[in-house]
Length: 247
Image (cartoon, rainbow, N blue to C red; front, side):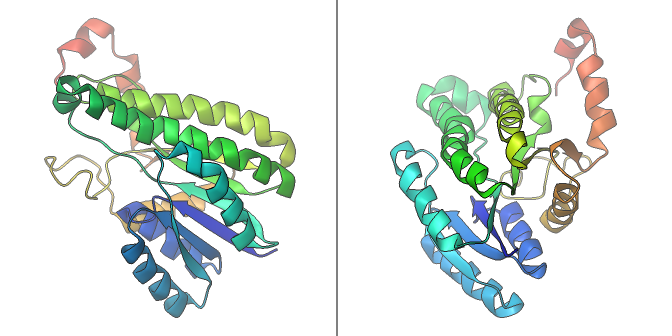
C-alpha cells in the first residue's frame, strides 16, 4: 500500500531530516507548518531528489478551529494511501520568561500540548477508519521529572506522553501504532542558545534512529538511547538531593 507521511511542524530541523528519511523510503509527503515559502522550497527539493509527491500545507497548532478542515484536506490529498503522522512542532522559551509573562507560559502550553492534542484528536477517526498507520510524536526527556531550569516545558511534554498513551490504547484495535519519542537534546534552533549539552545528536542521526524505531512499533523510546540510563538515575534520585542540583 502507498504511504503518505504528514509532517506537522515541517520547518524544524528534525522534521526536515525525518521528511528526507521518509522520502528516501518512497513515501509521499504532506509538509505542514506556518512558513509556506520554506515548505514550498522543501517540497520541490524532496520531489526532485527522491521522485515522490511532496505537498506544502499551511498548519497552525494554536488555531484549533482550523484543525478539522486541515485534517479533511490531508485525507483528501493522501488519496487511498495509508496516512502516517510525524508530530514535531513545539516551543521552548526560557523558564524565567514564562515565569514573568503568563502569555508566554500559556503560549507554550497551547503549542506543545493543547495544539497537539487537538490535531491528533481530529486525526483519530481518520486513522481508525483506515485500519492502520503510524503516529510518531516528539516528546522530551524533560517530561520525566520537573527540573528547575525548564519545568513548564517539561510539564507540557509529560502531559503529551500521557495523552499519547491513552491515544495508543484507543487506536490499538484499529492497528494504529503510536510512538512517543523521549528526545534528548538535538542540535537545532531550539538548542542553539544553550551551552553544549551532553549526548547531543544531529538532526540527521536523530531522524534516522526515529525512523528505525517507528518501524519496530509503538510505545515510548529514548533517543539517543543513552538517555534511558541517564533518566532512570535522575528519576530515582531522592527529592532533597534532586532539588539541590542545578539541572
